[in-house]
Amino acid sequence: MRKNDFYAVILSGGSGERFWPLSTPDRPKQFLSVFGGKSLIRQAVDRLDGLVPRERILVVTAASLVKATRQELPELPRSNIIAEPCRRDTAAAVATACGVVERMGGEDAVAAILTADHLMKDVKAFRQVLSDAARAAAASADIVTMGVSPDYPATGFGYIQVGAPMSLRTKTVFHRAVRFVEKPDAKTAARYLATGSYVWNAGMFVWKVSTMKSALVAGAPALAILEAAVADKKNRVPAVLETLYPQLPRISIDYAVMEKAKNILVSRGAFGWDDVGTWSAADRHLATDARRNVAKGDVALLDVSDSVAITEGPHIAALGVEGLVIVATKDSVLVAAKDRVQDLKKLLAKMSAK
Image (cartoon, rainbow, N blue to C red; front, side, top):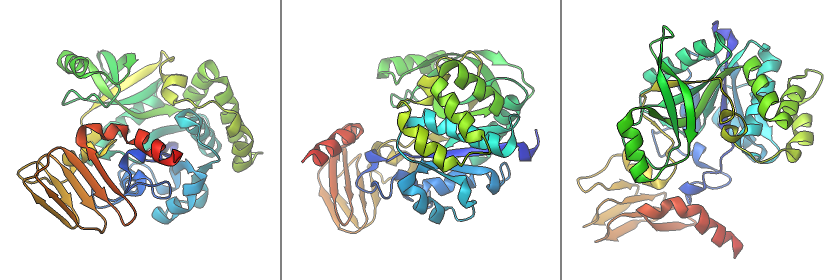
């Protein structure tokens, strides 16, 4: 596969509510530089160096975030930042991306659907898996899902059950997908880990345009219409999206396509992937002290353990507590039990209802 046949699409429409108060509608999680010293969306683009030229990197984001995205990624062509007029989950974004890639590179072009708000500690290993996945997608009529070898019984990720290893003459091991499963409880996650036949569903996949078009026609006709309209060079992409997007269902690409398709290959990789979905992930990626605390900013802790304290201004002082998340900005302060931060959306909904 030639480099110029390979495109990358970064989905960046998330609101990052579980990282409130640092993450806000105007500056969601993908723009935060808490992890790694650079924003997550900048890291997502930089990981593609040597694989995908910048003119073939696309970002699909909310219309309200186009300006911030262009400021963060000034090297990308302006037309490569694609604005969603309203939120319709990942299936609509993927169908739009498929149409734009077809418009630019034709039906034989290969695209990787990636995320703007995940971390990969081993970038070299990630590039190897992505490169092998692109080759596999180019040489077949398969959708390639990028699975991650689990190293602990995570309950916050979805899983994919896989069949026996396949021989594709690549450094990366590939399997046929058997089934997709939702986030398990702790006992089930431990069983998945013990069997060795499950991988984490990282929400990243690679396909040839013709392959994804066929999958949309078979499983999501309304999205197939969107893809074809976007791909048609006689149409203006923004006008197509303004017309068709509001009519589309809110559905993820997993439900719309992946769980129905039979032609799915799963790559198995280990590259330090984490979707850093909540503040409880902070101690996996930031320095901790001897009592497993993360402290960032003007923070003083005494007899505190297993806690996260991050501030953008106000001084944080904590005494004699355990298992807390304390995050402060100039406008807001969050104090939460570490094992309850997954419910932050419920708290924000209650706040907005007042």
